[in-house]
Amino acid sequence: MEAWLYQHSLEKRLIDSNVLKVQSKDYLETTREIVNGEIENVNYYCSTITSQTGETVGHFSPVVHLWQGNELRATNRVTNDYLGIPADYHFLKVTQRAAGKVR
Image (cartoon, rainbow, N blue to C red):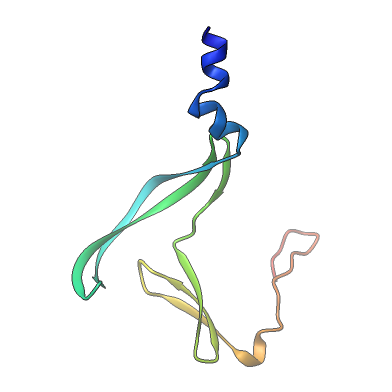
């Protein structure tokens, strides 16, 4: 009977469907931001994406990538530091050399 219950359980269906979970890990910071027209505290966490069996699939980055005007920006939402790449340089890409150096 227990085998039948497991075969028809929600846990088994989630595993078979390869449903992913998001787990908040490390607290980064709380900032005050405008949300739906009101100023609220917003908490930032470094989150991990896992499978139903607990295997780590990936991580959410605290860095946001967006277009602003004619510039590609990578913005850290916690510190508001950003790297702006003008349209003239959008063809560039990061490469890794044999020695492990990133250029």
